Length: 542
Image (cartoon, rainbow, N blue to C red):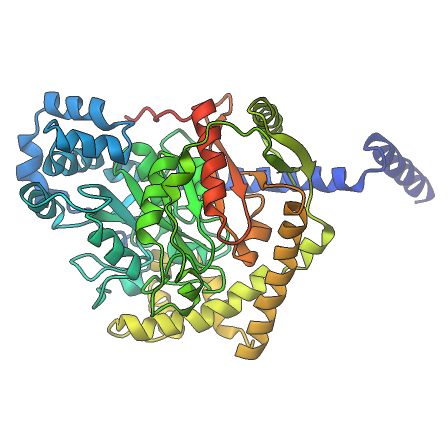
């Protein structure tokens, strides 16, 4: 025993010497190991052990067969050449020059969904039965609106009052049709967008179970990554995968803590998570309103800015948006600069880095310097570990889901308890990974007063971490969603853009983080980075 203890002590001393007495290096290596193990487990669930249950919806593509059959392969290929990398402005120019119609574009996207998504990538959970009808009306009407004729999809937790359902992927909400569009959808329609369909997601925006697969829901099944056998990310999995795959121009996702940024990074698309209070959450199925927001996923920074212009603003039904009542921003005005000269960038040292990510981080540092930025490496202080995000979400979900269900008026589903009970009737098909997060939230005893104190404490700690860094910097840059631990509870904006691919083809994104309502600054810097690097490339689909 003494000999064992002696050699154990020697081994510990050697390890400490090897890492240079740097405890943070040990933690970083351990974090990387844990994250790598979790990612490998995710890949196994998403591909090798993919769940297919009786609860999954069938996508009704047959309702469009008449129009689909009329589009020849030649016409399909010609449209593909025109729009595969087109911006919103490019598409609208094609409309103006009569080289493309709204109907043709919608049918083109439906044909791509039929060819590449159904029973394959599985990013779409439901199609709008009126999509072609709306497109025909656009072709015959007056061209008006910033998003005139632009097909956009919605994450399945975003409410509509049309023929589609608002489910968050939950079997219990399979028949839910709202009496009124969400504020975001109203704004999209007012600006001329065509709602093409809804996208799959990690069920309840990844607040179903701790054991779930990213991109899995009972109604939607398993969404996959178009770039290969990689984690699709979550919870806006279908939105990111579908945009990357060319199934719509853009998608509206939602984020509570990384749910736009992470899947956007994993699928090589642009994702903007706005400041809390910029975009209404009205009639969007919540996790916790203290951190929830809708945002935009697209192929281009320019498109994300244009769509955000269309959906932000004050909504009487979401009191927190009073913060943006007098905001008069046009985010496209921030896209005119072409240099980062003089911009001070604080790059957040990765808390973990797997498979070449550290090389990409270092390469990004060099790129930003070459673009004229002044770059320094920073870390959050240990105080960030005092943020109790899980506790806040557990309490918030219990309060906010019941509040939402009173508005949604779903037959037989009036509370979180009802959702849990409906799933229990057939767990194998309705909750194959379990529903422990729902159950823990239901059991949560936090009072409203305690909850408010908790979210204020989290916000204070997190915002201080970011604000301290931004006192001497213009923007924070991180790998993927590694800054979410701070920007999410702070309510601050984050914008991710493609930063290339690993040698195996897996996409990687870098994320720009600013202070409250600094979206314009983020668009400026991200647009310059995107324009100078032009890393994004479309996946090869089969």
